[in-house]
Amino acid sequence: LEGNDSQVVENNPDTNYASNRQIRVDQRNNRERRAALAFNLTGIPPDALVSNAILTLTKYNGAGTLSIDVVRINSSWSEPTITWNNQPTNDSFVFNTTLTSGNADYEFNVTDLAQLWINGTFQNLGMFLIPSDPGGSSVRHRFRSSDYGANPQDRPSLNITFFDPPPKVIDLIPAANTTFNTSEIIEIGANVTDLGGVDTVFANVTFPNSSSFIIPLALAVGDIYNAAFTI
Image (cartoon, rainbow, N blue to C red; front, top):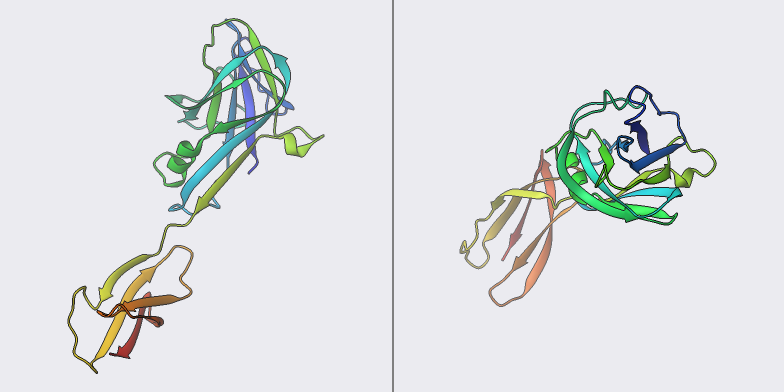
């Protein structure tokens, strides 16, 4: 996923940097710089289970080691208008800390934050990358922004791995531990729903002698599937 990004600069508090080809995170007394990033996650189902979410930034300039915190932005902002003076508020909880030194692709693990966005716990308003010690010794790091055109693969990206939860099965018949007589016709049914749609439903029937059968259930109406078989 590609997104929107900009930087806010403490000593240029009314300047917007949306069209800049870089975003910077600077640890400098009274000259702090923060990077704001946001990604559109609307294509991911709200009940998806996130197994991994990695923010990747390409650093191309800067010296020294800098500790960078990822924090959740919790108020609205706009890439074309964000400045230091109107920057959004952020949560104090740190979702990831990454140390940077040499020029390279740096990865920030934001799996927990992505899950909270997707399941609706928090509104997806993006994240700030801020120096862990804003007033510490002077360290400056430059990363490619979403406006960097020479090598699009160097732009910030958020790669999310997720999977759908298992289908919901309710109103299952027959009830567990129900006793049947030999040659009796048994009806099997279930209400099966899944966000992505259900293609096929099977019932696994196991007999007391441990033999088993796989029986396909037919869609009857709505989300109800059923079948009948004889012992």
